Length: 117
Image (cartoon, rainbow, N blue to C red; front, top):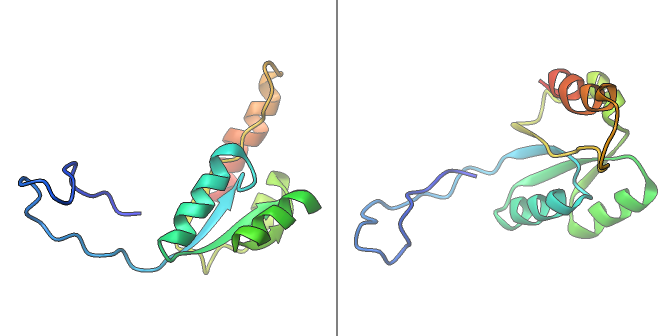
């Protein structure tokens, strides 16, 4: 998604004509989560292809119903993913816990981000 001027389309300060961004293939983690579902919806609405990582059958089914291409696996598989044909990676997966040892956040947030890079 391309950042557009902060004015509304009918605003007199909006003198530029925004061009639609080129269709991209986006790989997304956390696509079945609260934030991820909305990201999938918006990307598909904007005409992008979405590949989403799914840990469970339930997550996979929800992602397919939205129109995403499901990539089975979890964040521990991030190093093994073939992302050569992907234009953009969005890492929206995160542990949903009130408290956890730092090692959980290190693995799921930091290490996974490095592996996806």
